[in-house]
Length: 140
Image (cartoon, rainbow, N blue to C red):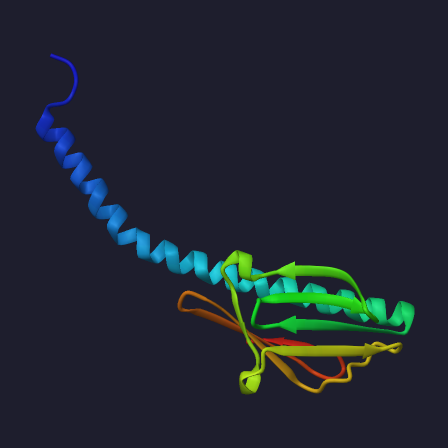
């Protein structure tokens, strides 16, 4: 007789169910962590893009809308790039409960804002980005 008995199949399915119930929370936490880190690195890239644009045209700013979890690179009133992090399940928090922040750079690429902190979160995971007035970034 070929094949498996009903008992063997039941045991195999029970083992798979136990393994998946153990791994599912760990994988969800991992997914949240990777989402938060990807959002932070996206903003780091936008900061570099903003500084480069400022040196090219004289001034540019990175605008953070924590309420909508959106980040935009602007030259004057023109938005040259926008990223919606809220659509990826990421929340943005700014210090002192502010809902909007701006990091502006002059033609030399020197920032006008000193030590702006942006915090990203998804689920229970958090990551911070601290930007100095000279444009240096520190990842926490």
